[in-house]
Picture 1 (cartoon, rainbow, N blue to C red):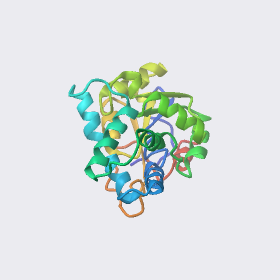
Picture 2 (cartoon, rainbow, N blue to C red; picture 1 turned 90 degrees about the horizontal axis):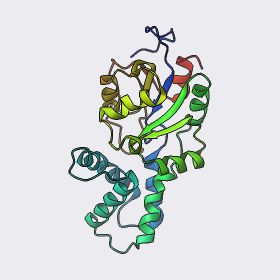
Picture 3 (cartoon, rainbow, N blue to C red; picture 1 turned 60 degrees about the vertical axis):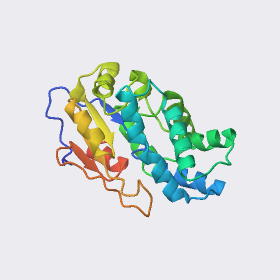
Picture 4 (cartoon, rainbow, N blue to C red; picture 1 turned 90 degrees about the vertical axis):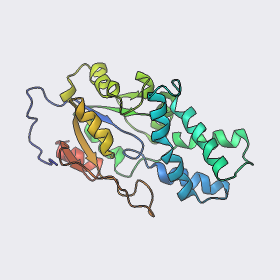
Length: 241
């Protein structure tokens, strides 16, 4: 894992930083757990948040494999929520309450280092989201949290979910740069593995509390990543911002 601040080894310099959002830039677990606990459901928010998130990859894989037609991320979240409520025998929530709980994904707080780190990185690079979240969700989140994106890209832009290569190649195409001039920034090694397979540089951001204080994060960085940092501020420092 390289923490050297020297210039890029390629002739064409790094120009774009593309960020995973959930877990990397914003703290999904705390926000969802608080919203669930506020409703007083027959399951604690800590557990419910992790179970809701656990439905994420199977749902995205189902869409990518053609088992379900293209479905916006917030609609997938609502499907997952219905399944999870049924599993716990929770039947009293109204449709309005379900929609309000689902909208919590738009209202997540950034990690404490996120705004400063993004703002510093934005001084030298184009910064954009590259998230599975749908565009409307990401716009609302950015407005509420003050995320200073230059542009917002998502799976909805390309009508396929990560880790499909179309997203990683697509960000380079949209930003009119070569793949190696893009760095994917994420707290999830599988995301970075897919990006590196498409020729992108990669930066792993360590988020040990992504799954809450009672569940150690099992994710581990690969030494093949271009960068490793414990925060977006540290990444900015490594890149001379």
